[in-house]
Amino acid sequence: MIWIILCLNLATMAVAFKKRMILYGLLNGLFLFLITGQAIQIQEDLRTERTVYYLHNFISDIGFSSAIWYVLAISCFALLLSLLSPGYRAHSQVRPAVTFQPSALFYVSLISVLLLVSFVLIFVVVGLSEFLHSSRPGYQTGATIFLVLLFVGIIPLLLKVLFRGKVGPGDITCFLLSCIVTAAFSRIHLVLYLTAILLAFFYSSGWSDRPIGLKRASAIFLVGAIGSIAFFGIGALHDAQNFVSGSFSDLATYILKNPEKSILSIDYNYRVGIEGMSGIAGAFSQQYSYPESVHHDFGLSWLLQGSIQWLPGVIKDRTAGLTSFSEDLTWYSGSIVPTGAESFFVSFGLVGCILYPLCVFLLSWQLPIKILTNKTSPLVGVVAYTLFACCIFFVRGNLPTWIAFSFSYVVVILASWPFFWRCFREYPVEPRMPLARGKVLN
Image (cartoon, rainbow, N blue to C red; front, side, top):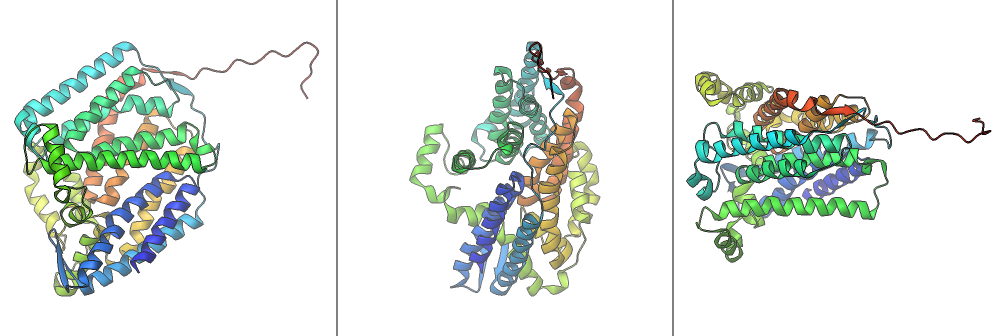
């Protein structure tokens, strides 16, 4: 049955790309990697054992079998929605009325702000020693706020792409500075930045209006492959820091000699690095083992935890009682980072197999079409593409993080927007060619 699920997810991705709904295809690809890929490995383990452990998830054979049916229902419904829904129609976007043309002083000011934020984050909040030697820097109180603030360095390039401006050295410098610092702390935020930029490029550069042939599909695949290599490569370097300290070459040497102890190993990756099918199967296993523990909160725990999570640490400490109450609402706590599919099952039960793919469809299919085919302001455009990229958290998990970061990024955009809106100019109108004397228009 797992191979049927695999084929269903591949078909969903193919339909989404064919209809130019790239975000829906990417999210279903992430679902396939996290859940379907790990399900194959768990099934192999259960051939010889009746129970297995993946991270903190206890999985029984009966729990895994039920989880497979749940995932099959999600895959079927996701494919059905993609088949029945109209996709993006070529040349249906509204031509932008403005263009983004900042001055040199704008870039100098923004780069200075980014350098200051990076300096405070590395040397004050985290500490240089922790930054250089920790495999997971950035867990200190207050670090997340600075990581979100670094997003302002992505906005100039995003605006240039959305409004078809000429990308200059200032845009690239701000983008690279934010990406390099963010990559050292959080790969998932780096993926979020790149997703926002790539989606904007696909729809604003004209790629979405052209047929997706072999050449274009190969280019998309190449970009995805490069992104995946960077994602796993950075993760492998962080993993190596758990076993060895030293220079970049020392870390690389250790990875090459011990690939089984890094994220580059599929077995290691699915056993101790990723929670996908393991979380869903663990929840189903607990339901069978301890049915009296099951109770559904209908999403209330996400809303409470997500509302608390974005708060600064000083204020968050005063909400300890509310945090404990929201955690008590969740009957399954085996997963460290539960996927969206798991969270929907824990909160809604089996109805989650319909609600989860429906929400993914609304966020990554219907909302993008609404934004693409209607005239929007620059502010709405930046917010929309940022929220599109935040959908990664909706699939990968956890849902409180999706709520918290979606809100936090929007707040940062709104707070910094006065710095950007002054740089917009009316889009230059193409001059009309004069008619030759005696020529009459029909």
